[in-house]
Amino acid sequence: MTRFAVLGAGRIGQVHARAIASVEGARLVAIADPLPGAAAAVSSKYGCEIREISAIEAAADVDAVVICTPTDTHADLIERFCRAGKAVFCEKPVDLDAARVRACLKVVQETQGRVMVGFNRRFDPDFAALKSAIDAGRIGKVEMVTITSRDPGAPPHDYITRSGGIFRDMTIHDFDMARWLLGEEVETVTAQASVLTDPKIGELGDYDSVNVILRTASGRQAIITNSRRAAYGYDQRIEVLGSTGMVSAKNQHEANIQIADAQGFHDAPLLNFFMSRYTAAYAAEIAAFVAALQSGGAMPTTTEDGLRALELADAALQSAQQGRVVRLAGPVGKAA
Image 1: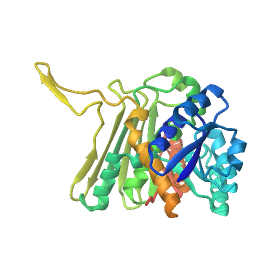
Image 2 (image 1 turned 135 degrees about the horizontal axis):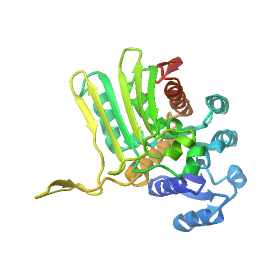
Image 3 (image 1 turned 180 degrees about the vertical axis):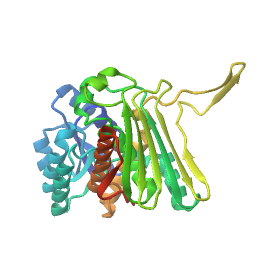
């Protein structure tokens, strides 16, 4: 049994608390949050204790922590709990600064820390099945990956100011997926970015509509399209073209039905947002973390994966701002 504490009882902390509760071999022991009401809500729902982070750090009944605190605390907490001998699951990103992530990665290596970074989309059942089809050779050699990721609406403006921008906050998930699916290093990054949905986002120094092309050393390409506004719902699709075929993962709907009438064919609405769309992925992600801890095997997603995705985000921002192709300074991209 892996005994967990969750640090942070906000929206993503609640998602992970629910995931832990659903996974066999995992138990939520403690929750920490500076807001008493938020911690109390999780404690009441899952029967865990409310504790200070320092108490969790010293606790003999906690094997692993899930870091769901603000981004600027992630690297410090990873280092702190690695030194305390606890396993760590940390929501992305490790930090918004690549140099800080490299320093954190060094501490993880020095302490032989067991750390997993939360790129939940790899664990979505449909996306995992798509990857399995690729690995089984069903479509031959991968040539082009197309990732569509559009939110139903933008986050609050105060979140925009601390998010690190759309490339580091939103597209970073798609950079990780692209690395995972391409199977080769990314050599160049080309990005275009605009403000089309909300002028205030531009005033805050960010974009809301972006397209990115990644190219590997052999010429494989990944095309990523993001928008902060999709009037029809949470749009999450992937298509991979190979030398002998194609595999795709479609959107998920509230119900798997289609109604036909005099006005045409009608599907049920798309699942609303990440908390409902990726419920199964979050549970599978925690289950994979628990399995790695119990077997002693490699972590499915690591701090190095977090660094590589961030480097791609930084390159995309540079490309969009300077209007040019950015060639990466070092090897980025080969994910198992």
